[in-house]
Picture 1 (cartoon, rainbow over the protein chains, first blue to last red):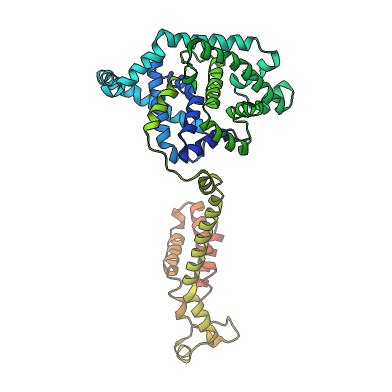
Picture 2 (cartoon, rainbow over the protein chains, first blue to last red):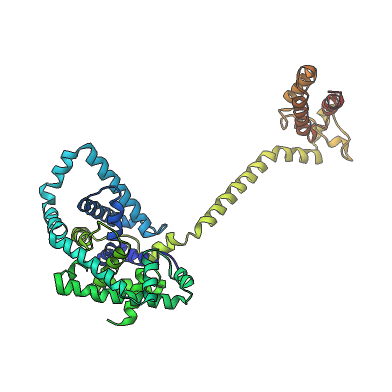
Length: 202
Length: 220
């Protein structure tokens, strides 16, 4: 199985003008990208700004993406370059950078970021998501927990997990799906019941 | 939402869904907000398991990117299938490489043939000499063929313009052999012998060959 086949099918849709497919790619990689950018900048809000810029650059460059490398590899390079440039420009002119950040063009985004990420409510949401997911993982049967952890934490393919767990690939697929469903069921309750942020994820 | 679809979504998230199913699900995913929300939660689950500290899990980046992209023009690019046919398979690369190599080889052969044309003319002249050639041939004819009168010496002169310089060089090397290193001298003379062997079997050949052989046989 190609390592990038599903990403590539989404990329092809974006290249044909489907913006919704790009949204799916952003949803999938936003956390990874923010985490990556945080190697260069410590401030999470700034890392989110840079990740956002990287995604927008990627969207604009997507017509030139031919699929020679995996989409995430390509996106990774864009994000690294964007982060490096941001650091260099901030080091050169920290005052300008701060002024730019407060300019009227971005005031809307700044307000949005303050509202959604840096407020106690945003932090509580993140904490609650973490607590819920961790509790749900702990409650999983051993085989489901092992499968989802090997996949998400170790990054193993289904075939590798099948070899590690000594079971067919179809079983691995089923276990990972059931694990996700069990966690997602509890996660949905957080969004729908508690803080009403379901639309934020979709 | 049916379980099979959710199972496919989970496998697609892991890049483990067969390509044909991916195409269909990608279309649905890009339009179905509920499915996309689930997809986003799968990403949040993964981020939590990886303990990506400092990363906010409320999909703020996605919301902001979506807002900017909505104002962007729709991308215009070759369709996936066209692009895949044009770039994805890369089948044409080795073919193109082979074609270039074949073209170069063909050009070289053609060039060599064109270079060899005067020689061929000479051969034809040997086979069917004109009366004037027979008249001006002088005493340089060799008995290489059954018809000695057909050999025309002057035709060989332009074909080997480097003969006299190399002979001079050989003489120079032989004359100064005592001052040169035996290894260098032998290599140079060997090269000259090889160079001249095929072509200088004519009147000047024996003179050079004798010199070279004498030198080569002489004690170092």
